Length: 317
Image (cartoon, rainbow, N blue to C red; front, side, top):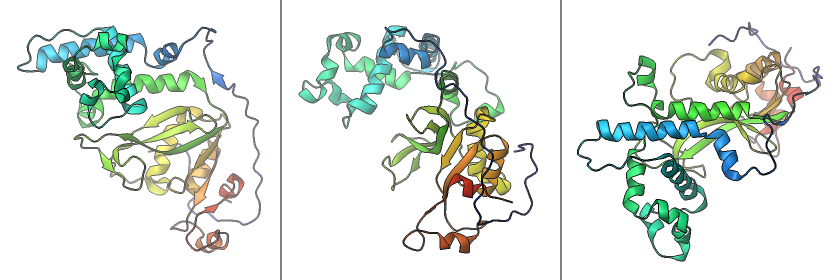
């Protein structure tokens, strides 16, 4: 990937304090659209997951079942209102009320009483309908002819939805000057070729994404799936390329970016500075780092992470 900059062939580390010129952060922080005082939670949701997108999912789901699902009879076409109720179920069942199996949501117990609220019960009086939607919901036009890139894309079937939401995340809110980059696991235990297992993480099974978030609020500004890429990433490294992809819309804004040792890279820090973003992160002694100098400032014991200020990380001369 060409970032339009000649990175230095040899980089030297210095141990003196370096004070880079810092431009004042003047980007207006907060929502980019005026919201009236009577705005509700559903209004906020529809700002990101708008009615046009929901209508497309309804259309694609009905086309998919009628055209491709063999042996299915008496399909009742889904509607926008039913799809909104289905999305509400997904949000509740994945975050607020989690049970081992979906069938348990329809038991008459205190633990699952939320699914006996009249309006929810009206939309899904029988669990069969809910499971039909969960099985056959479709997010892309099944009649589209795929390009070669789309055929290789493991997330093609949700790419249109995710691209729309990510675009809204980028445009509807301006983040504070402090941002962070880290990996994020989307929980998933079904069969999926890109599913990963990370036993040391709170979420053990799922799909790994990389996110750019506002440090103060946790607002997600950008998210990407990196996948497998065997191409040579050069001195920038694969993680460096991921970071540059996440922040490419923020060049010249004066944001401060914080990373863990998996992302921290002296070449990346220098490149971000040229692009108008200052970076800070943790570092471990490894190839390309001044190991002896890092070991001298490590905390407590050998091998523990050493915290460096962003001034020290970009003190490259």
